[in-house]
Image (tube, rainbow, N blue to C red; front, side, top):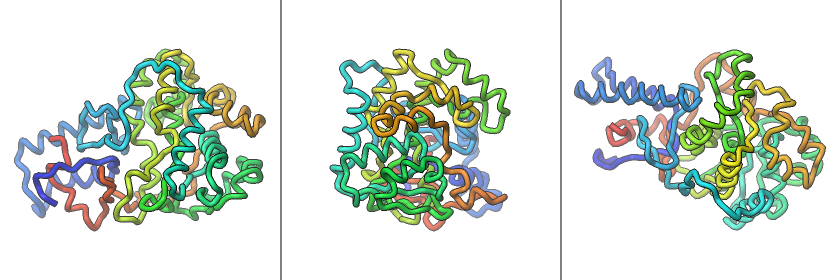
Length: 359
């Protein structure tokens, strides 16, 4: 890699960040020597990013990407793969149902097999219902971590999933998708767009603090856009952390709710003060049942009982083998560049240069 060509990323892992910390400190004198000013600037940017992660309610292992392309953090980030949607009211939007179906048709017309990560929860159920309405059955590839989604929503298996091509990830949910050849879609962005408060006080605090956050409506209302702006583009890449391809086709990265009209709908909801806030971890079912009503109403077209009684699910628990071990996971993907190149342990040294950073 040429040392004077800027590298931009769409995903960076905490392992890549930690590699940079080791590289800059260069305790053994093995690598490039950085001048003292660079080290100071690096540490400043690192601390600035850590502070921004906390402000945006992300775990310290996460990363940020300003979808408006204005705020910089430690790494050069790219937003080219998703149109800029400003925070402004959009008049005359189609209904939410029409927007969902338009998105499903858009994905169908890309003409590729679609890898759908399915948990049995509201967001992924809505996606499968929408896609099943417009796609030929052999275009859909349903991926489940294990049999839990079938137990969560048995009627969904009987009505739709059981008639489609599906498979279980068998302990490697993060590695089973093929974004080099197939479209890749998840429902991860729906939480951020439709009322999730994220990790309000840091992921490992107690239940009382999370519960408190549910009731602080104005606090969540005021911070929604700032968090959405900096984290919306970071949601679904985490489920690609263990893919074994060398390069993904960025046009295949198609999280279902990462769609301009869906985002505009969410912005209108926020400006109309119609959000029902909920946490991902400790919301009681009664509170969660009031949330995501647009998605619930959409699902009700096929299954009212499920739509208005479904609580929160978590796709990832227990379905990625490395996450069940008492050691740090050793995933393949360290970062993904804006052209889809996978940074891994074989080529990482090509991406240990100043052109990867904002310094």
